[in-house]
Length: 117
Image (cartoon, rainbow, N blue to C red; front, side, top):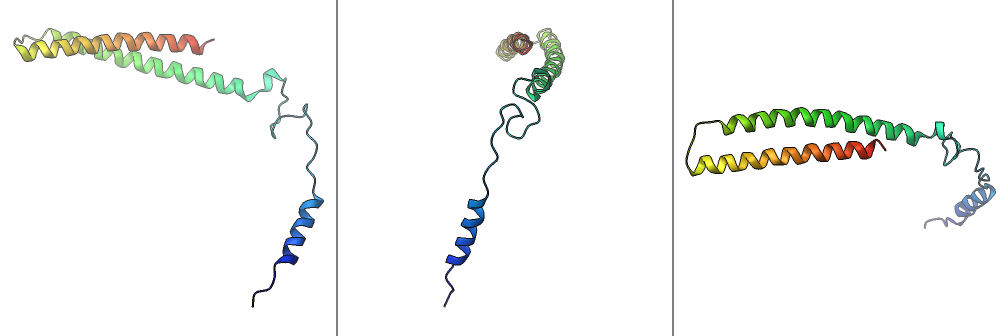
């Protein structure tokens, strides 16, 4: 027959009840962090924002480089001596790609401007 667990539960409750949480000091940091809530130069958020800005700038440069390559390809493709419905469809689609590249470049510039604020 199993033994009752009441003794173990009583010990747990007693040891839990004996510990009380330390009081919160609003000037000693937040949630275990070592910075104070009003210390501007110590807040890790500012480092995270700077890293995000740098990451956006890196991706913008990469995207612009790829956009330049795609624009060159699109312009060269339009110069191919080719006629017919397939050629017309191809050129229409290449024009759409070139327009998408332009919109992407504009969106990237807007994103960078927002990130720098």
